Structures are given as structure tokens and as C-alpha cells.
Amino acid sequence: MSETKRPVALVTGVGRRIGIGAGIAEGLAASGWDVAFSYLTGYDERMPWGPDAEARAELTGVLEAHGARVLAVEADLQDVEAPAALITQVREGLGPVRALVMAHCESVDSSILDTTVESFDRHFAVNARAVWLLIKAYAEQYDAPFGTGRIVALTSDHTTHNLPYGASKGALDRITLAAAEELKHLGLTANVVNPGPVDTGWMSPQIKRWGIEATALGRLGTPRDTANLISFLCSEQGGWMNGQLLYSNGGFKP
Image 1 (cartoon, rainbow, N blue to C red):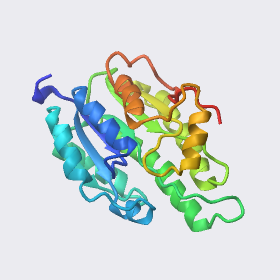
Image 2 (spheres, rainbow, N blue to C red; image 1 turned 135 degrees about the vertical axis):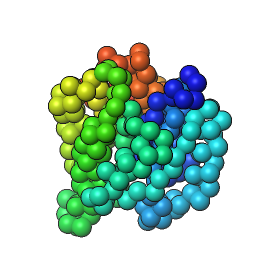
Image 3 (cartoon, one colour; image 1 turned 45 degrees about the vertical axis):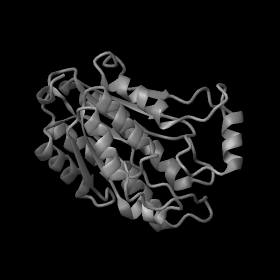
């Protein structure tokens, strides 16, 4: 593709170079997409791994090396106005969004007995409400040939001792899959991907051993594994996959 003909993909949740979102962004750039990505420094600052100060510049260089135009936008998706503002900023900076890939999340472990209302509400605001609002804003600005639009959201089965995360991801599933039917007049596809356990710096040695032992292929997933599937779903060849919750996890059985 020439630069002027590259479609625009938005990938949310790309705060760290080691993360799944960064792998997805690189995979799409290598497949011929211009890429916008969102990040939230405050989230990484709250998490044990801390912020990756060099991530944006490093990833931008990687994507540009694949011929992509790149736009990085900080967005706090807990803010009810942020999803629409993000879509608008990407449209103004790169053009209409043709592929919306939602890899962002709020993920703080807690259980039925110790989850706070504040944490519960934050998880649903980021993991469910923002997904709805992103899809809505994406559909309202959608301007591409019938059959070429793509929506993909990342989900998880993790619920035990991770109540607000797991419950909000269940809501994400239903919202995204509803888009396949409700937005069919636009000719876009909407799918959910469950990548299983991927070590992006959060796993203890014990969790790594457990994940490897529970996976039929005998290793943990990588961001590239997830990126390979999402690049396919966003491609012309992946256009027949629609309204599906797909497991891309090497045969992981917890």
C-alpha cells in the first residue's frame, strides 16, 4: 500500500513496550495500517511495574519503520467524555478510524469480600462503559467501504479473586458482540479475543509455572501471538469472522 491508502487503526491501552497493545500496534503497522494508540501514564504509575517512560517514542519509531503514520494520545477512559474525544482526535490527526482494537483495561485484584464500590465502579467505567462509548463514537464517524470495518476487544476468563475485572470483562464481551448485529448496516465485523495468560511483566515464577503446565503447547502466550490473530481479523482475509469470542491461548486449560 502507498502511504495515502493505508487505513487507520486505533489501538487502546498501549502504555508499555512489553504489553499486548504494543504488540498489536506493531503487527498492524507491519500489515499496512497507519496506527494511533492511546495510553494512560497514571494507570501504569499505580501498578507494580510502574510507567515506561520511553515506550511512546520507542514504539513510534518501530511503527514508523513499518511505513506507518503514527499518533499517540493520552486518554483516561474512565472519563465519560474521553472515548468520543479520542476517536475525534484520531480522525483529525490521521483520518477516520477503520479498525478499533480495544486492549485497554483496569485490572486490580480483589475478591467478593474485599472489593470496594470505588474499585468496582472504576473497572466497569474503563472495561465496559468505555468500550460501549468507543464503539458508539467509532460507528458515528465510520466512513469506509462496506465490509472493511473492524472492531476487536480483548477479554479474559479471570474472575476468582479478580471480581471487578472479570465481571466487567464479561460485560465487554456482550457489548462487543452486540455490535456485530446492531452495526451490520455499516458492513463491519466485531469480535472478542481471549489471549489467555500472557506474561507482560506481571507474573511471578509460580504463576509462570502454572501457566506453562496448564497450556497444551507447553509455553506462555506472547504479545505477538495475540497480534497475529488480530492482524488476521483486521485483514481482508479475516472479514468472514464476525460476532465471535475467539480463544487464542495455545490450548490453555486452567
